[in-house]
Image 1 (cartoon, rainbow, N blue to C red):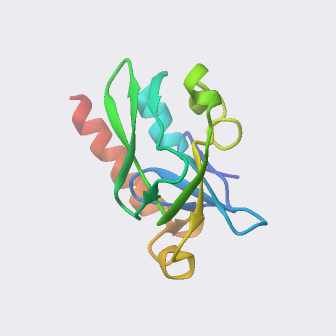
Image 2: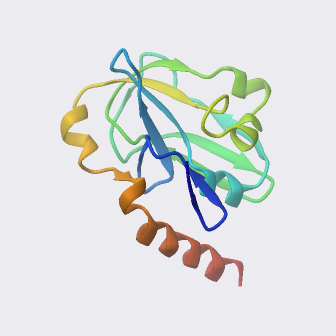
Image 3: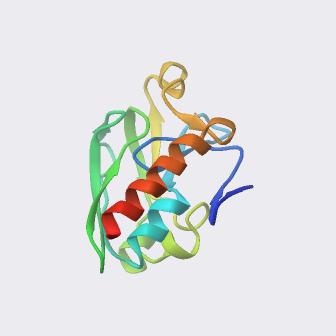
Length: 144
C-alpha cells in the first residue's frame, strides 16, 4: 500500500484518471471501485446509481452516478466490457465506499472486452504521483 499525502493507493491496482481503480481477478474479470482521494473528497456517500448486470460499458464513459452531501459525481468505467455483477450491498449502505474503498466498497465487476490494450491507458502507483498532486491542487482551488 502506498500513502500519497493522506491518500492510500494499493500497489497492485491500476487507476483511471476519473478516480476508479481496477483489480484483475484470478478469473480474468475486473473488480472496480473508487479511489481513496475521490471518496474522501466526496465525503459520506449517500446514494449510488449502479449499472445493471448485462450492461455494456466503455473505458472512459460514465456508467453510474454517486451522490454525497457535498456533490453529485459520476462513476466512469476504467475498462470496456460487460457488467457481470454490481455490489448491491451499496444500495443499502453506500458508505461502504468511504469505510472500505478497496475491499467491501467495490462497485462493479466487468468481464473485459479489450483488457490488454486498455490497461495501457491506466496508471499504476509507480507513476500516479504527478497526476494525483495535480488533482489535489485542483481540489484545493475549487474549495476557495
